[in-house]
Amino acid sequence: MPPTNDATTARAGELESALLACGRGETDAFARVYDLTCHRVYGAVLQAFGPGRPAEDATCAIYADLWHHAPHFDPVRSTGRAWVSAFARASVLRERRTAAGGPAAPDGGEVA
Image 1 (spheres, helix red, strand yellow):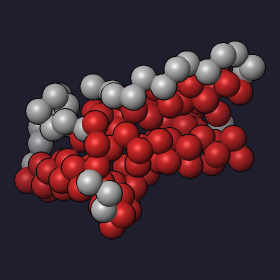
Image 2 (image 1 turned 120 degrees about the vertical axis):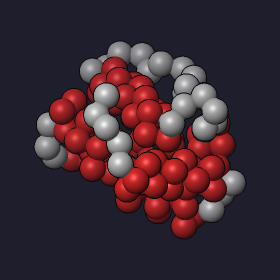
Image 3 (image 1 turned 180 degrees about the horizontal axis):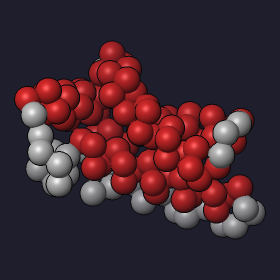
Image 4 (image 1 turned 60 degrees about the vertical axis):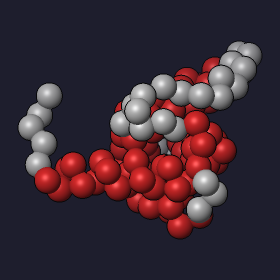
């Protein structure tokens, strides 16, 4: 694990606070969650789908789902970064199954 510095720790705390506020329906907090995570999420989506419209659509779907599932975020169980990463990964897998014509996995709701 790479060493952390004060800026990294502050960003992690900011993400967790924003996720909690997002879970309370605060749209400004959702914008902050997006700003703090979009590069990592879109990078993962690009690896799965390649550049183009499918990646853009999948990214939009991930953030729409994240907005609805934000109340499930629990900072005692997971860091904000880990929760968003796990959520995005599960969403990418679901999107790929759907795009391949397979059955969509049932919505599991909560992500660790």
